[in-house]
Image (cartoon, rainbow, N blue to C red; front, side, top):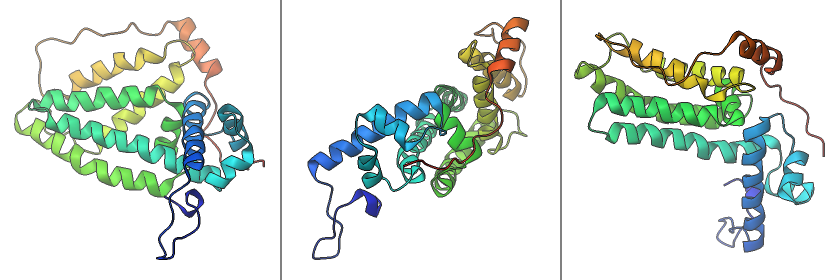
Amino acid sequence: MSSAEMSTARPDGQPRPLRRDAERNRQRILRAASEVFTTRGVEATLDDIARHAGVGVGTVYRRFPDKEALIEALFEERLGTMVGLAEQGLANPDPWAGLVFLLEQAGGLLAGDRGLRQIVMFANYGRDRVGEARARLLPVVTQLVARAQADGSVRADLRPTDIPLIEFMLAMLAEYAHPVRPDVWRRYLTIILDGLRPERATVTPLPAPPLSPAEIGTAMREMPRGRPARPHEPR
């Protein structure tokens, strides 16, 4: 917890925990930030979050000195959730099912949270936290891939670094198709999963229909342009 989230130091030099009302405000701000970033992305300002939380912007700044500090606090938790998903996959005794679990659950998490997609894919904010989460995630993903290859359920040339890139592709697809059908990413995950198999006699039925030409046109018109910028924060 940063100094912005603590009160004055105790006599022994350790920071005092926040007062109960201050901690309630902090949690309210984090909940509001979660909701705002999920729908609007990290372009939202601290003023937007303060309004959504029903507190003054000064209260937000007392808890978090800038937007990056708030994003780090929020997304460290969410990226930790992704690490937990990988660990759950590894706990599955079926190596293939464990790998599929991670791809499906992480895909759903990214598809449903615009802010998380931006922080993971572009790292304009919270670079240190994202790097730390990736460092924690890769060893578990490496084990998931290795044991699936050892039992012959995954092609031998798959590499652990392919997994986050697959998730990035699905996340971009979710962003692209969000105006018309945000769950269409599941169709392409199924195609990818079939491609991860070393051999197969049949193909898996696709869980969603393709986008129609009209839907593609709508998605192209409405998709946000470019990567998120780091805006200056109004006070």
